Length: 302
Ligand SMILES: [Cu+2]
Image 1 (tube, protein in one colour):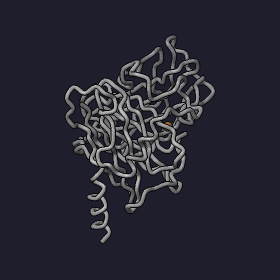
Image 2: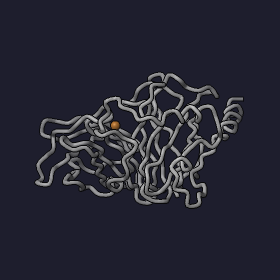
Image 3: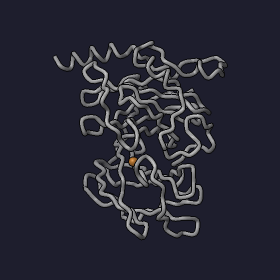
């Protein structure tokens, strides 16, 4: 029945083999590192998307071609002259509460001026240290710079909260990370094995790309539903998808640049700055029929 059908289509889509972790022997030619493996329609589609996009995006100077100018973000609560300060108490597991914080500058003065990037002034990403429980929130800011949001952490554990923002006058995003412990019994979950496809609420997301340490890697995601390409994705945060990638082990938060496309699916393309070889957890949010869903998968970089 249903699950069997889904399994079938998943198997068929397995043709989009994700090359993450594939061996490449000293080939530094850009073309060889990225590219469709399955030779699928969707992947072929993406090849023409190599052109630079404009689209009045927030990253001045274009995106996609810049090399890794700074390391990954999110490893510290202070970086680039900014500090994230938690103002609310420790959340309790399974209980809705308010999470409050502020961003302060090097003189401990609250920062209140931000540029809008990806449609918002500040993105708050919440994930447990074992990479379970991903949430993406947009706290409201008071005039004094305090930001508040309702937050429910279903389970105990060591949670990590990332603030991702673009301060006024800067051209590079700042990502700060804060540990938020939640008391209780914590049973860390093992990270899922790397997979080329993920199923979520009847949608299948197929990933194609080759993450290579020390450079910007293109990651192409194709969204299908019941085997049919989804071509009417809805804009979400200024693009047809939003991607967050975290390194397993320390939750380094990678810089990701969406490639603007005219087509509303089924292919969504990102350039991901991968700092090192290792295991990454990738969270793709996409909107369809008014609902935002998050497809999560594990990827290897070498
Ligand atoms: Cu956001």
